[in-house]
Image (cartoon, rainbow, N blue to C red):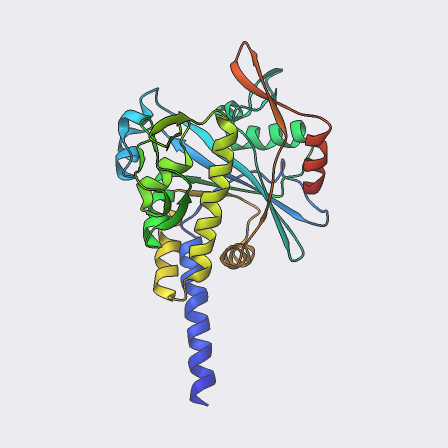
Length: 301
């Protein structure tokens, strides 16, 4: 009799704890712009680049890397799709040139965030013709705290690498254990330089190389979550994530718990969005490369 009661109390305690964590998450009214129905579920996950000086300091980042103004922008955007037992992940380059919803003009997709998450969702749905069922946003302060709560993540570097703008400093090739600030410096690097045979070689792929690093970073985080069997570590990770997390208002507690559980065992198939370089009044931009882009996007419809 005692064991079933104990298990019930543990389960109840876990649920109450999960609810207390969930209730601290900010919600955004978005029910009228999100998609419904369909066979799979698409989550738009956004990493927001907070430019408030104190936020940058709290994240352990170099304030000089954020010296180009205040405010906030979407710095990392990806679609994560669950369809049955399959998971796929597609990064959206921030320099992708698309029509911006509600403005009557076109620009880089990350500028849609200037009008808020709703406009960003409307822009991506219209420009890429993919449904978005849920929206999650986390700022860089929470990203850093999440990585640190997991004890850091390991990234395999083929060569030593650095980025003086983001603060990345990896001095040896091979697996490197990164703390929160260094993990963020890696994932947001836009001036990535490798040291190959003693020579410094800048990444010629610009935003495209950054997309690959984003996916590598996320798979490392998911791997750490999945390998952790310590409930206190997982609880610490949950607490670290909620402070800067925002979700859409259709995201309920039970669905959030299912989503978090799936993240722990997640090994998504990365899908590349084919793009090509170009220039216009917005500077250096990216355009969808057809018909290859259409084939990639079809996997998220």
